[in-house]
Length: 461
Image (cartoon, rainbow, N blue to C red; front, side, top):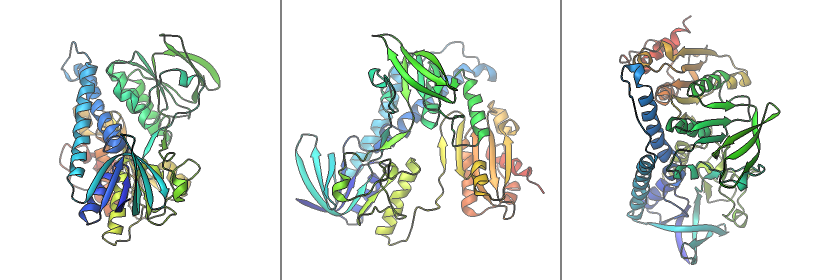
């Protein structure tokens, strides 16, 4: 049996960099990947979807060029070329990461399925069917999550799409029905509408992006509906039926009343579920919660000493950058002997609809729940010089501040380059900069960020 200092299961945005750093620190390290190197982000998430977002944006600009005095009389969507560009970029990232790992001294890379034998031993089933056992005192789980598929009558009888399989399409669906009105569903819904699909979004909550403030949800719905995307809220798909080779009929309950929708494709985008089922966690004694996520402490260690869980598999914010931060925390604690934890760290995120939705810190809903004193600064993008000049005034900037300390508690930016503007405010939050200081900052003109002056002028005493 081969022994290592560290075994990492899963090569996502925590596992891959952690493996290299541990090996470079002198630990004999093994990383096991059952599918493609790089995890969800590189293969099924950020990288491929954002290449398609770019293509969809180009189509949108071509269709709306007349507003800027550049009418484009004719353009077409070349979906095979859009897919090939995406595949090429994914492959470049995947192979680049894999080759870098394989060249790292002290790091072994194995492709196969890993299952615990006990708390220090892992059985690896290789792709050729052979099995071997490996041991280590340190084991790190970075197996991520996969699309959650709800139990809906008839769903398994149609060829439904999820956020992974939809990326294999090399044609534009005639009518895409999206189940789920949150980040994944909205990104794909807008994307395919711009490619030419008719799109209907079904969301069970009263609002799309239901975790955001209501004004954000309403503005986002207005933006999407302006692109002729049909949105049904307080709605649930309850049945699917398809005649041989024909269209799919979805029965949807909307405000308690049933209606039938005919479509050609169904995208299920109602969340994700952790990939823990086949790990044999019970043999190692690793605890999970009722949804199957691995339970960790502030240092990302499980209930079993020496076994850690990083990224989406542990639950909590399911973002690439959080997974990467998990790696830095674990590495710095173990190798650099620091005392870092995951509590109270900032959780910025960006939804790559167009315009983007960037968010960090608390929003107005959370401020109310906390019962704290706060003020709201809000500025429509229609009052932002750069937005007016570029011809896109959709959305707004919004910040929550402490009226006593004048510090920022949170920010939401729905608008062009929303994620970048949000990040400027995140830096202010991290540095303890007050909104009074930002009000009088000298920003280069005419940047989007320059309008942060105006955002906080509304709070002038």
